[in-house]
Image 1 (cartoon, helix red, strand yellow):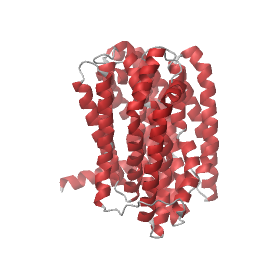
Image 2 (tube, helix red, strand yellow):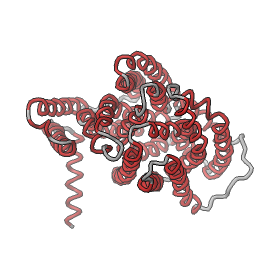
Image 3 (cartoon, one colour):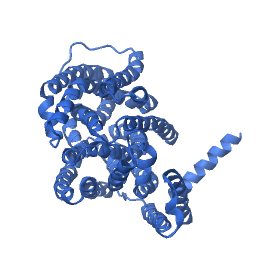
Image 4 (tube, one colour):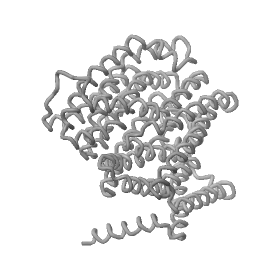
Length: 505
């Protein structure tokens, strides 16, 4: 399992690097400007439709497929599901075309008439990506359940390459050109997953039925899953709605910062959780709860070992990260300063989202998605309330801060719930190493800030500053863990030694 996770992390890293190049290329063409806001905003409504389907599907589908597989009904169920999804997603596509104007006004109420009209126009054009994405992630769930993780991990490559090419060739800054490239990119992504699926020679079902017991099981799970896993997206949408009234370029800058923030979660958390979730679902279908809880605890501790220094390091280097990644073309240093401030306040959610993702997948594998609803409702309510308060005092920074504070509140509620489940299995949710992680992270961050304030360290330009800080911070963090003889740290060292021995043979 660890080897599979390692390869998936590598593939996801490649995919996310291309994803960053895509954002960098778009920022170079449009910067943080009027046109950048229009492009980003035109993707909001189709993106919401995609989230409504895929967020729930991606979490619910794997455990249902595992249950169907146990009774030899996996392929029959999936063929029926795919036909139903095709019909429903095309209906969603038509709804976007019809109601693009009121939905766009709802999510970017601060736009002026010209900006709003242009956003509505392009929203209707890119609406086709919604059914394409729904089909993509349905097939991705099927691939992951069959443990074909590598194809799914590289799913972003064709999309990103085509949009990058469109941005590079778009020297005049024509928004229509990049919109066409975006649609072609999503089409290529669909073909990427469709090919391996067709190679399995599926027997297509042209007469879908709603009486399928596994379809009913999926529907019963998908509503609470949708509410819980879509919470992060809802929070971001609230941020965008309020940011739309803060001036040109703010919506785009918040999106750039959020994508940087999500990169770490995507590479580390999704690679681990994709493999873990499949194993959790199979253990759940076998009623092996002790083993399920044990591997969840082990993988959560391993994730925190890595995610805590990344979250703290992103806060420390927020301005440098935005400068290195985006300052070129029409994206200015002044825009990077604003984007860096937004990223600073978003950065704590790297850790909170990671923990919630792992715990949430455990609930879903146990077919207990409603367990997350309390924390989700509270988190959404806290975020919306804080948004309206903090935006008045801190502008876009207040919106990002509200998202982070709300995520901590939701996490504390979720941890309280899951702790009781672990206690019933005579297990502790928390690894003894957690204290070591927090101490090492606190010392690392303190030393870096002291160097910035008290030495010429702060005079370094963005790229050398980021590289030196990452190397020094990593040495401090992992050095302290080694000094404490932290179990997970020693396990990683042993694995590295084994890899080196194999390499010498």
